Length: 125
Image (cartoon, rainbow, N blue to C red; front, side, top):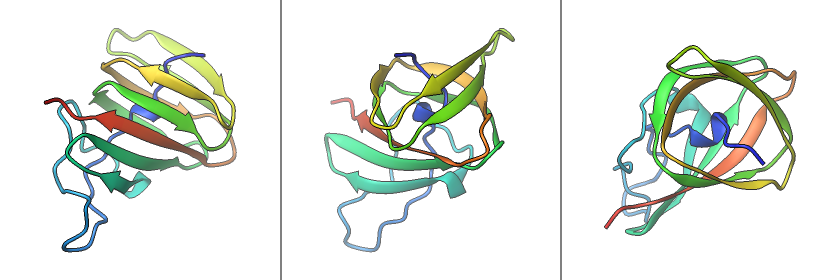
């Protein structure tokens, strides 16, 4: 199990309707990087749950993430690039669950299929 790039994507786009439980605020350490890839599935005072979809061979610019749980909906291959220039390739499987610490990175979906995952982001109190 590895700490990967795409689980960390937090993109500021609110898909909730007025009066919906999903708030428009995002937890600290999130980035407004690629809004069309993200949909808020659930949000309350304790947690934000995001669904992320990264297209085939899509590149995502450098961004910061806050700590979170990531659940891979399908398999995927990622290339991660860190601020110091180091890179790492990762392979993830459908159903895989991991904890990610706060970090900064960029990345690329190396596969020919979209990657879909769920990020569960606790909110600080």
